[in-house]
Length: 182
View 1 (cartoon, rainbow, N blue to C red):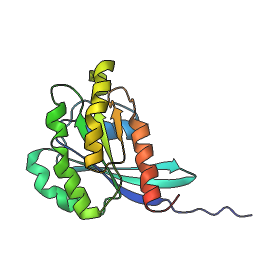
View 2: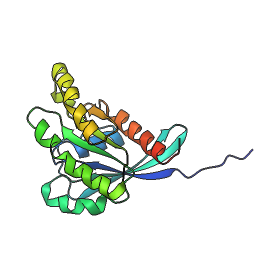
View 3: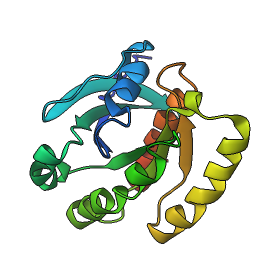
């Protein structure tokens, strides 16, 4: 019997959130399994990566969008056609609330342009948080997840890789489920 090659499905994934939360480092860790320290994204970066989920290959076209205020007016046009998103905040005590409080505007745009797509909350930089603080963080974000109808929360560290593959794998699964592949 001849083997049939099926073209993988391609889905647009947008990484959103304020500047400085580690979005680019998170994407780079997922793509190359390496850490790059603070890099400022100018506009948007693209990464394409295939991932196997539930016996299907999904190609993720990952759009790493700049979070600085000077680029935010462009975000609505970049958000069109998104299949799933990670909205990211900085878990460090210094920037936690300021970065988390900026996410509703990003979520609103994603939903206005794409409907009820899967969106996961990502608290990055957990390498800067102790175990007790992580418990407090988990309690802090639960009302936020419920209020904005997010599909869950992941705590990651682009520096040491914790949680990075899990969050992208789960988002790919949710996107595939949303598009009735599973």
